[in-house]
Structures are given as structure tokens and as C-alpha cells.
Length: 379
Image 1 (cartoon, rainbow, N blue to C red):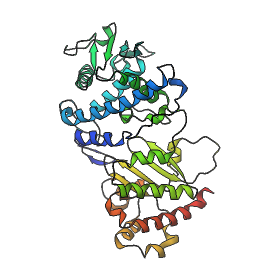
Image 2 (image 1 turned 90 degrees about the horizontal axis):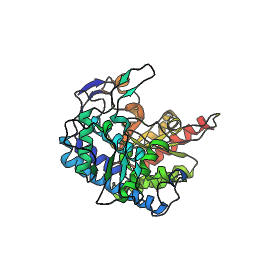
Image 3 (image 1 turned 180 degrees about the horizontal axis):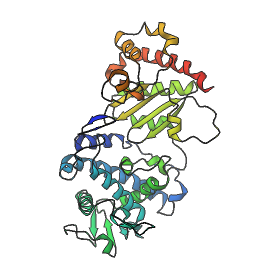
Image 4 (image 1 turned 45 degrees about the vertical axis):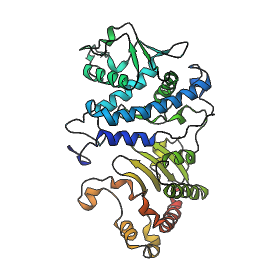
């Protein structure tokens, strides 16, 4: 545990993190979609699409292995900075991305030839100072052994050696006998992770484990299609509730931006004129409300209610539990209520579970009032 901006932080069990990752992997990947031209020299388009499905299935297996055997590999630091702060996860995510990105796919597509993995190698800066590899030798062995446990076969390196000495190896050959198409999918998703993301790539974001196939598409995905995947693990009534809210507010002129970092966000905002291109994160700051998924709080609806005084007579008619939540407001938990940080600055939080269905009409009325009241800020 550690003390930080979020107060005392306790890492979640690795099995819970595996379940979280599994839930945000796309359940439905279409058979046909146009690919970004940057990927077309990897293999034929059909093989790339099939390979991405194979990679998705591998991530499912990876999560299952993480649940059953992850405790042997994944240990949180003594003072974790977040609930998913496992160096092993950061390391293996980057190893997967680097294997796919820096390797060469064989002509038959059944093996990858690897001659460099930057995170395994020491580097020298302009002043001649040697910087140690991002992943220490012990972490390198852990990553490759876990990938072998998941079905990868490494040739040209002894995984049982005390030191891998990867930099001294001529090359490593990697195969996946269970489903060789996975290797094509890994290359495509690694290029997408390195080059096609709209948001900055961080060392600790585990993004490649999400198998976000939408990055490789030539055209952008309709947020509604992504939302359907997002709520797929929820009961059907909650899925319908979320999809209906999305349709209602995009139909009245709100836009939806999808942001996937340490959390998953579907944020709804009114578009305003800007002299510069706005990034997804810029647009996220303009949100009125959002759906969010995080390890800390699970599925939630957040509302950044700023104009409640304009419709306070309507709030008075709401059920007591909802009325109290709205009247309590939102902001920094420590400054407002001298409580440990619970992410209160994100907005008024309501769990997206069965309890929200009992107040669904009031939620819609509230969002109508707040959205209409805030519209003027962006007109």
C-alpha cells in the first residue's frame, strides 16, 4: 500500500485485473472491414483480419493463464501507485508489442524472426551515459516464460538460463503452433499500438492486451458500435438502458468521444469551435456526462452537474436517494469532505447496475435538464 494523491492504494488481486482486461476485449469482431494502408504489406487483408481474431482469442487464453498462474509471476510493488500497478503486466505488454513491431514475419506466416527488443537492451545517450534496459534480466525471463506457458515456442534462446543474453543472440524465432495466424494478428496490433493510436502511448497502459481492432480500420468506428461491445458483459436491461441514452443524446446534438486509457470512457459533450485540432483528451474535458469502466469502481455513469440551481424544483421531485446524491455535488473528495480520494472530481458517480434501472426515468430527466442548461456554454 502507499500514500499518494489517491490516499492509500492497494493493488487488486491479479485475477481481478485479468477479468477486467477480458471484459474490455472486443467480443464481436466483424468479418469484413477495410484496413489502414500502413498494414497492407504485412500479409493479405483476409489473413490480417483472421489473425486479429486469433490474437483476440490468445488474449482470452492469456487472461485465463493470468488468473490461474499469474500469482507466480505478477507481484505488486511495496507501494503501488494504482490498483493495477504490476510491473510484470507493464513489462509483458511492452514485450508483446515489441515482438510484433520489431520482428519479421516469415513467408509462410508461421514464425517471427526477432533480432531486437529495445526494452531488453541497455542504451547509451548522447553524453555516453549507459542506461540500463527498461526490463531487468529477471523480468525478461519472466515475460518469455509466461508467453511460453501461453503457447509460444521460442527457438534460439534458452529460457532456463540464468541470464538470457538476448543482445548476444543472433536472432530468436518465435512460433505459435496452436494457431499460426496469431503471429500475423500480433504484428498488425503491435503496429497499431505503436503508430496508429490517437492518444499517447505510455509504458504502463497495457493497451495491446485490449486487442482494439478498431485501430487498424481505415475508417473510424461509430461510437455506438463500440458502446455495444463495451456493455456486452452487462445484463440485457442495462445494455438497453445505456444504448438508449447514447441514442437519445446524440440525436439531440451531443457528440460522443471514446477514450481508453487506464479507464474506459464514453463521454458526451457539445462540440464548440476551436482554432486548433482537439485531441480525444481535449474533447473529454468538455464532457457533460459519461459512461466509464475502471478497476476501482466498475461500470458507472458520471454526471458533471454544474447547473443544478436552474432546475432545483425538478430535483425536489426525485427519489430521496438520487436527490441526495445530486445535492451532495462533486469535486475533490479531500477538499470538499475531508475524505480520501475516490475520484470525485470525475463527476457525480452512479453505479451502472440494476439499482439504476429503478431511477432510469429520473436519470433521463436529470440529463435532459443538465445537458440543456450546459448547451449555452458551447453555442
